[in-house]
Image 1 (cartoon, rainbow, N blue to C red):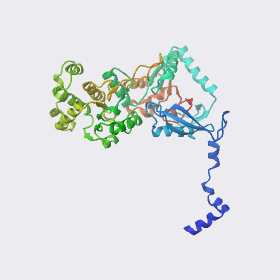
Image 2: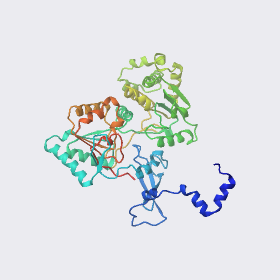
Image 3: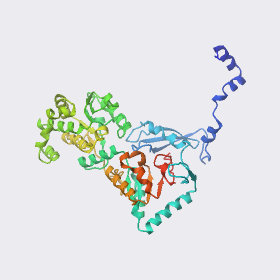
Image 4: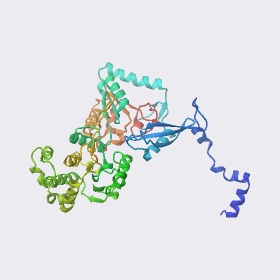
Length: 462
């Protein structure tokens, strides 16, 4: 039956009628029970909030955040204006941190499997029981001289947590593997070979005036979209000089391509060839020190001539005129910067492609310079290094071969989901079926945790 405006106002006229009318809009009692703190803090002042600074752990970007806590409960997440990575901005994943904290499916106590693997059948046990089960298995491997048959897979971690993990693996004798997206592993390897540093540097987009991007969708998903979106704003309008120019090389029209001054559509997998062609043009024009070119080519520049624009135009899908124009724009800009990743690294030649791309920065002479590549300094804390780089896909394949051969007796997984993150060709899930004990430290039931025999959930970072 349709409800007219007059009937609606009549219903609203009486408080009793309105209470009945809007009963369905009330907050369910179950929600009130879930949202109420079990134990109020001793220093609670009703109606007064506190803000605590911390680091978001929803992803490896680790943005600085401040959390509003009201009556003992986290209520809001904001960016930390004093944190150098994001300077007060924060991404949507940081907002989702509250959902991970209060998620009804969050694992709140240790669980032990009671049914077949993957069945989801678990029962809750005490922490004392869970730790006893784990340590007894570790002791058995140690007593039998098979400590190296225990494997720990983690995400890249640094700081004091890295020291704890290192101490744990060294004392138990187990092997450790670091899992991160394959794209990031390729990027780290390229950075290591080109700049001699395993950690990813800061790309000073803010102060650059010509940005040449190869597949790096930095405005959407690449490395730290929050940091580089802020830097992009400075790049465009943060200086009195003419706004910076962005040229994006990609095989697809990504978010970054849509924001670029020029989108250079290239055939997939040929980004590295295009980068080498640009180096060839710049070196042939004499716009770079010969010593730099010799160091990049091993002293034999003749092979570089095969990448002349006319020779690679058909293969890359980019005209020779466009290649020459971009080369001159890049070399004649005061603060040029070349970055690469994403789709450019997602091929069998991804490592070679990124090495060619980042070599452009040696050509530009911008290492450690304003608007260039800012390498990370050593940690000021003795004994604490940056996060360990991820293991290569080849190393994980070797691990799955050990699993298949029965050379892995225990698998511990912390902060990673290799069942989901590794390609199907690695056969990580099927080969891990031979492992007697799989332990997860996840607080949520992801692909890997759902196959675990024992779950010891970590505390949420909030």
